[in-house]
Image (cartoon, rainbow, N blue to C red; front, side, top):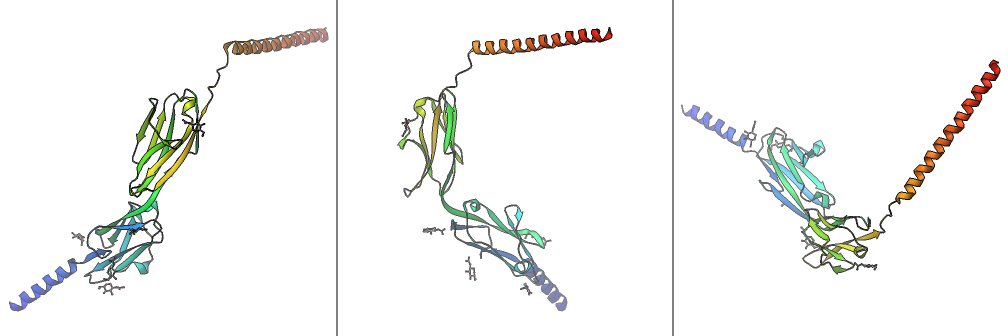
Length: 250
Ligand SMILES: *[C@@H]1O[C@H](CO)[C@@H](O)[C@H](O)[C@H]1NC(C)=O
Ligand SMILES: *[C@@H]1O[C@H](CO)[C@@H](O)[C@H](O)[C@H]1NC(C)=O
Ligand SMILES: *[C@@H]1O[C@H](CO)[C@@H](O)[C@H](O)[C@H]1NC(C)=O
Ligand SMILES: *[C@@H]1O[C@H](CO)[C@@H](O)[C@H](O)[C@H]1NC(C)=O
Ligand SMILES: *[C@@H]1O[C@H](CO)[C@@H](O)[C@H](O)[C@H]1NC(C)=O
């Protein structure tokens, strides 16, 4: 009886150790965050602890599996990013246990970088037409975004509308006037006073003069005359050749 209990205890404790296998990602047992400045390197280390045999690890970057060497996959595995970029911000790396993929841990990258602005350098609009000036932005930490017109803060005229999305600043000008031609600067202002600027030059072109009706009518008449003349000329030829055939028939 004692022997039986002992065996039972042993097997229970064996079961327990077999199932208390754990994952550690950057030394912690929970999902975490990894901060870094742009261009810094980042290292992620995933480790299996309390395992009784070789355990193979796998990595995903977002939903994409990461290629790792087989020698970097047993019991402990590293993924290194040589230089962090703005594109890495917010991306999650997940380490999974191959034998049981429900055992996994993630680390989300938090990359600090200067604001990145994008936009056309020049835009053209015909006087009287609407135009939308768009400045794309990406920033972490967040920046205050606003427009300047010829280096002065814009007090939006009534034909201007400002609109902001999570990744773009837009300025819509309704019925553009010549006076709206200017350098529009999309500004990203950081709390430390740093400014990143993207300048977009708006050129307001002359109204395109529509073709006068008389000119169009004259062109149509000329075209019709040419066609008629061509027909007459051909008819003349047809008649003539009929005549000549009549001649030969004779
Ligand atoms: C994790 O722990 C190891 C040793 O216990 C240590 O060398 C390493 O610096 C730690 N890594 C992190 C990211 O804390
Ligand atoms: C980023 O760089 C700044 C100074 O350049 C430093 O103070 C800060 O600690 C760095 N942040 C991280 C997450 O490495
Ligand atoms: C992996 O861990 C297990 C359990 O600790 C150990 O028996 C095995 O030798 C380790 N494998 C490698 C390649 O380190
Ligand atoms: C896989 O891991 C989960 C979470 O730790 C656990 O609940 C489950 O029993 C494991 N499945 C197997 C087949 O070991
Ligand atoms: C902006 O400056 C340009 C030349 O420097 C000037 O031609 C234009 O009229 C100015 N626009 C406004 C709205 O001040």
